[in-house]
Length: 321
Ligand code: HEM
Image 1 (cartoon, rainbow, N blue to C red):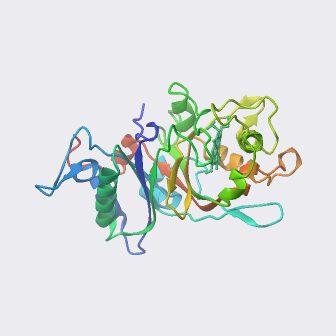
Image 2: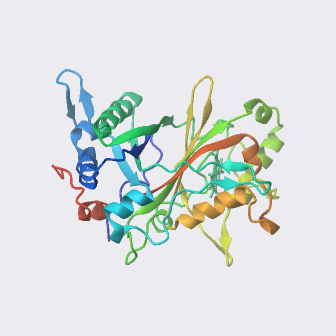
Image 3: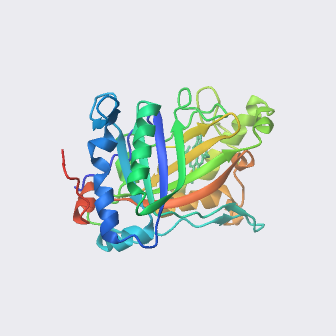
């Protein structure tokens, strides 16, 4: 079986999302050579201030995941690009308003570490390294809030598949194009108006999410507009899962989330989004109540190839470790 990148690791205390757009004159060879360096100790280790060099240390190790937009991976390695994998599309409400803008970018690097200084130091180095071939289009530091709560105080991740089921939901199966890889949807969501949500009673807040606030128990009478009701995806009586690794970001003036939706089959995430905005009409015409309080401002899809697929494309670290 192909070895997947560590995209399923539990949400790390500190994370950095970097999204790049390749420069028009960047050659395939340039991109391959630079991506291969991502696993050098300078990036996966911690900066040693005294010596100015990257060193590996137990507390400072950075987990690195790299994903590629459809055009880029299809150019680098068409033989391992999953069938039907395409760019993130915008989502419009049935009234025609754009609810989720499409902002497809080319390369996504996800850094996870135990400390902010470690992850930031690595993010700066990665961005400098890519400078000759790519422009940084989006950066975001994220973190774990309390016991994996949203800003609204609800636990995020309860219904994620467990470790025995998650690989099947996340990774393209053996024998298929792109085996061991995962498709990932990265979206930035910004919260507003927070005061309106806070003004709701606890029962009204629970109706928005479809779970209890204290301990994340699914409501017995689930409102059709609740986030849980809109995102449970059933086909022919079978529930189809994705794996989520969302994390909050925030400052005094702006708070929100980076949504990280991982799926072997990209269409699962797309269909959940369509159901959140009621685009299909009929029984699926309800709009997710959560979207009154938080809005998507970016949306990009990436393919996260297995290590085997990276190697086959010529992306090999100088020291495989
Ligand atoms: C950034 C805004 C979002 C926030 C704050 C958020 C938060 C939550 C929370 C608190 C839950 C309930 C607990 C849990 O099972 O994790 C949940 C469930 C879920 N969310 Fe989201 N979510 C967001 C966006 C999305 C999007 C964009 C999708 C899919 C496209 C999605 C898919 C799901 C799924 C599949 C579940 C589990 C439903 C179930 O089986 O019970 N979420 N989300």
